[in-house]
Length: 637
Image (cartoon, rainbow, N blue to C red):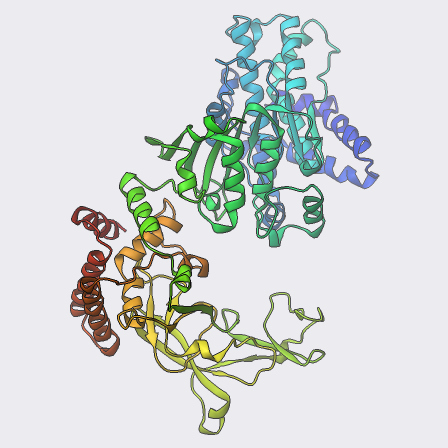
């Protein structure tokens, strides 16, 4: 390592690379700061602090981006977060290259590879090592030192011509160039033993926005760790570029990484491979549906591998996605997807199954789960479809639009109240708001003379019970209180679960809620047995919570936040036969007991809830073996 750093500094390699980018990007002299930053990174003491044992014989054991690690540690976390960049661990890099088939056993010497968000070069570094190993195999050499000068030159030129990278960050691009120099340093020394003045060329690391790449150039491999940014965190400038590029998956809510998936697929040759590590939101989140469908319609999904959280400072869990571009519908539909939830556990599903799952990647479902979800989806109407049934009128609404704190602020210019925005800018006029105009709209109690301006406000609930009741001021012009008709004689559903079960209750009286609760109201029902108590019993049952977790959750077995469109998708049984109406009446009786008894003992509550669950299973005609499967699932959580 010391020898390499001496080479960089003595021969002014960093200055040479920096001058290339300055000229290429038409940068000003102030950009010399970049060069100085990198020179500081290369101080020997920084490398010693890494506690890495350097051995001359361990060239190919060095599976990490040392320069990138040090740069990562000296960078401000906010800078990394703004760009959505996180260093990729070597184990992930190696797995993706191997899974895409980029290894020394395959004929990769004429295959073009690109990382379109290369950073300081984690994937580029290892791809270069693999290509060197491939040529050692072709040349029948065991060590780099055994290469001839011509063989060494051939390796260098193949690295230059067939390994590509692009990144918007100039320092990252310079470090990536340095990293390639480092990997090729032993190869360079073979040549310099005969040609002292030989210099390495500049490699194909482009400093630019990947979104503007020429999509006519195609690659055999697209690999990488695309940036993790949700639409609200993407700059207006980048959003405009995305809009002008006409990406198919950029409508509505989207994440930056899904644009990189679409771009990566478009850059592939037919039967080319893509390997990415991305957030697990790709799996089932509703606003990722467009990119999942795009993936399904353009590629064979070779593998989905859950790896969890692998990045320092990252709060997301990740999956590795291995795709193969495929124009044949038949080959895509009959492709077997390898599902890997653990390094030692693999299973396979047919890609055509995704269509049945409405293109959700429900990788955690086993055969029994798949059967049950399919059974419920096929045989029972969704809640949102009940209004299509004769005689039904049902509404589902969010509550008052407030922030988590419930605080509001007054804009003197607009003469309106608003939930307090994070940036303290008026949502309407964009003017700066005064902190002194913040007040509470929710009160713990009210005095008698203010009662005409306040309504009860449900602050928290538990299953079948209102836990905490407060009061909300109703005279704050500008606050979206919604139609008061939705707030009485309705089921209230909380966004968060209770003990991994849907949490809902019923209130006959007028009582407002925040948007963290949903108000489900049966306005008209043709059946006396299909009332709020019956519907509440279904929603709070183990069967519906099982359906919810399996349909909208993930491998983590964590109960997902309940979103309104998910509630609309719940399978609802309408009691029709005499026997079914009898079961519905039993459910109603049990639910009424739980609603009326606020101080019921835990054991009695559990017994009654188990009775409700049994009746719901019977109503939906769930077999005994499947009942046990569902109950065992909740026991395991």
